[in-house]
Image (cartoon, rainbow, N blue to C red; front, side, top):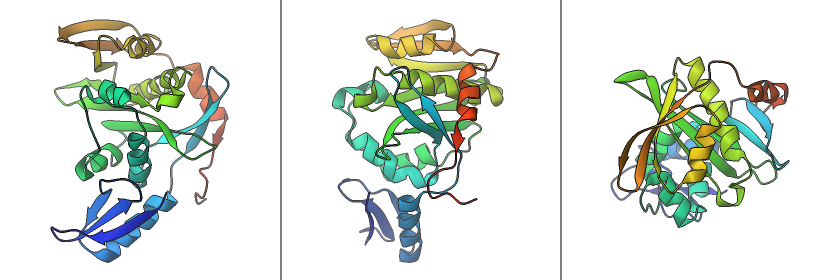
Length: 235
């Protein structure tokens, strides 16, 4: 991926990803923008773990980082209209700067997001996240999106199981989610994690609550056993 810097019409500077119509981030000075563009291209920090899917393919799983704005924007650009609709429950053409910031600059406590990377290409092929509900802190809203060519291979299940373990580590006991009633695959993924209860219906969507298991999943031990350092990472 190639990043470049250009002046913003409203002042400051954009960092842009070549081939992506929306800017990645905005900065007050050109120096800061150049620095962030280099960081996006380079990536940094974090523990990367390898997971084998049920079809035998492998992915790298790690927490999302602020430097992943380009990867996220590129992955979104390659989603089909149907996959975008299932994730956002409506048509969405692109991710805005503030959305990219929200989705990548997470605190890894009340807001966690896990990235799945294709080790052969370096492309983002899946994201799973939870956001704690402030009014009911034992609950968190969960969402998952998988690249079209990786759907049906077990990636969604692998990510959601790992996300559930992270949630339990932060004192979260259940996920809530809004899904299309027709999206039986996503409902099946949640059912592989815990007991699913429908709490409401509105139009083509269902509100569900997923009780998280209290015991660690064997998947976590398998991931920990194959933990690797990220390419180009220090240490």
